[in-house]
Image 1 (cartoon, rainbow, N blue to C red):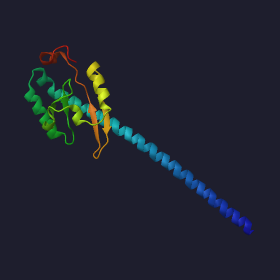
Image 2: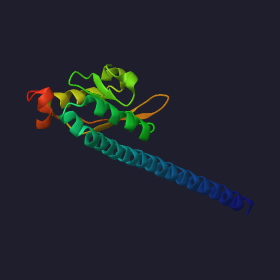
Image 3: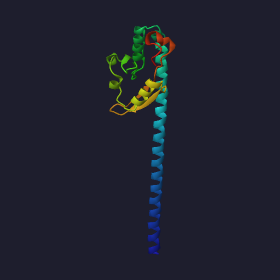
Image 4: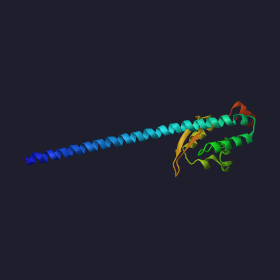
Length: 168
């Protein structure tokens, strides 16, 4: 009888241990899957936000750029800086020099000096050469994580006055 009781106790401990292990592994898998899904969902939301900001910037600068009013574009960028806390907007020329920015200290600098992520460059070069994708969002690792959203501004007929039809 003592032997049977010993076997039962040992067996119940093994079953309990196996159950704990199965539950722990299942919970770990669920947590990891949920974290991955949440990360992708947040990136999608930030991409949508980046595209909305790009559309707002374009709406505000379309007419001033069409008539060559650089001062109005600068004022619009200052307004963006005041209303969008934590967001920096750069507008670059075809040589990737920053010509308009919400942060005036970035003006005239190379875009490469402002964005550290190397995955941005192939997409940007492709876009400048062929008209490329409308937008791209990437994460930049660092002490303060940030998202970079690039959007190419194609040369429209109203832009030909200053840029010419041959520029993209």
